[in-house]
Amino acid sequence: MSKIIVIGSSNTDLAIKTGSIPEPGETVIGGKFMMTAGGKGANQAVAVARLGGDVTFVTKVGDDMFGDESRTRYVKEGLPEKFLLVEKGTPSGMALITVDAKGENCIVVAPGANDTLSCADIDGVRDEIAAADYLLMQLEIPMPVVEYAASIAVAAGTKVILNPAPAAQLSKTLVESLYLITPNRTECQLLSGVKIESQADAERAAARLMEMGARNVIVTLGSKGSLVCTADGCSVVEAHRVEAMDTTAAGDVFNGALCVALSEGRSLVEAARFASRASAISVTRMGAQSSIPHRSELGE
Figure (tube, rainbow, N blue to C red):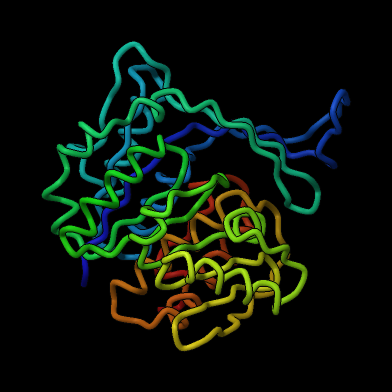
């Protein structure tokens, strides 16, 4: 099995389930409150671990109770403690999440220690990046860190996978370093400049990202599945039909599962099918890391 390194964020999620997400200036009475582990990087790393991948997670938390709890939890998940860094005098990342009756969510993140992850920290994991077959990143850490880690990976022959979330513009150099980019509809529209209202639009948007330098593109389209595009063309991978309770971390589970499948030698289409199954399970549960399935639940 190939090695995977995930570099990214760690948050504590404060979530409320409610009938509808409030409009600006509106107060609504919610229902169940949950405080759970989250952060796109952590969610993806935990997904890789639970689904059987060989994973190292590099992140930074604050020196507070939330950071202590997060590090303890990650170690229990099998993530090496050595790379769970602590920034003194800084709070850990926090996310406020509202989930409506349809399972859709609205999220606001206070980055905290995530914003202090530095290129110097990445220098400390050069050997781990070089030893990995895949480097998976997101955009809840500083962009210069993402770009620096990608440059180290490319020089070492490690394949870079970027989940460009939250949506942000990317440098030409970063896009050209990517073996695979996995935007959702909104992110793909921002990056490509193509408005997506149909599969044909999604194919044009993916083609644009490949023209910009990405070798492969997977556009995630929620209940409509995903579009896998390579130099040989595009294929649709259908989503599994489930009753969604909470879509928080669905994309993170998809990305983590995708990396596991690729590390096992599956094609991009086969990997997307595997990831779709894992993601479908996650949306039937509340929370981020609390919703991530184990390998046995996928029937493999």
